Each structure stands twice: as structure tokens, then as C-alpha cells.
Image (cartoon, rainbow, N blue to C red; front, side):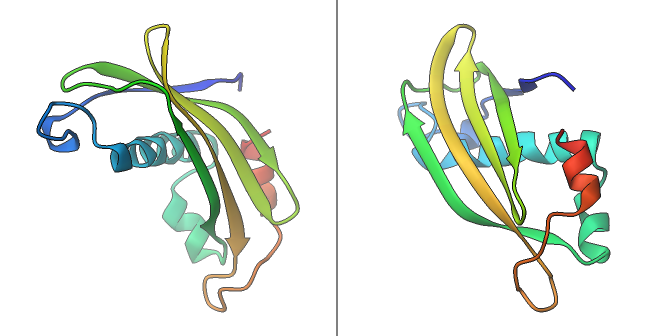
Length: 131
């Protein structure tokens, strides 16, 4: 797969404040939608991985707000880079409207055993899917 991974969305009314601007806390949700689609395409359904004994939890997130998205605009969520460590996966992402950078961020997730909630090695299928 080539990077960046692109997921196009349209801003819905429910995601905006009274001024028609996307509410700041919605942007990480947009990224979550894109990562879910990337995961489904490259690895398979997330629930299947959890059933086999691996899950991921957010350990760190950074969001930089550059410009607002507005109601009914089409935006692209781009995952620019994915780095897989021993027990974590780090995503570099941004949201754009055409050539305009709106948001940029980073998310690090740690792999855990769902039963014990303890850290564990990232599964090989995740490593292969994010290569």
C-alpha cells in the first residue's frame, strides 16, 4: 500500500457547533473513522482480532488545529505514516480540504491482551497489514 491512505468524508450538521464549524472534539472521531476503514482494508474486521486475543488502547494523542472545517464541506482524512513498534502502533495523520491543511496529529496505540489488559507484542498480521 502506498501512503497516504485517504478517506473522504462530508461534514454533517451534528458534528458542528452553532456557527456551523466542526466542534474541536469531533476531529479525533474523524480520524477514528479513517483508521477503522484502513484496518478493515488491510487487516480485516477489528472484532476478529479482539476475539483472537489482541486489542489496542490509546496511549497518546496529539492534535494541532490549523483551520476550521465547515458544515457540508467534503474533507479528506489522510494517514501519512504508520510505525509499528514492539508493543505499539503510531499513526501520523492530517485532515485537509483540497490543498488546505485543517488538522494534523499523531496517535499511538498500545497492544493489550483483552482479558488481562496487559501489554503484549503487536500481532504479525497487524505488522504485515501496516507495512
